[in-house]
Image: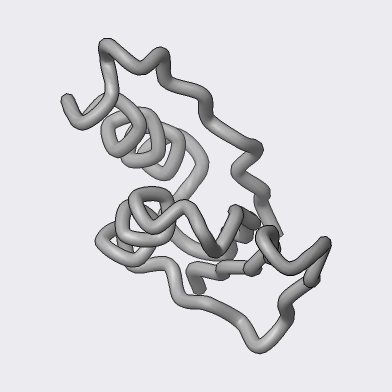
Length: 76
């Protein structure tokens, strides 16, 4: 399974499609299937982006504290 590491976009460049384009390009180069990633559940924008691109949450989560939960995604 291929893994997408965290993508950081500077605040002034957010919501312009750069992260989406980067993921699409990675999938174009390495294939669209068999990917995994994890993100912070409380970062709704991240979850929205990954779900929009066809990733689905697995049943695995990791609760760090009462304000931070890591969720895991896959794309088959």
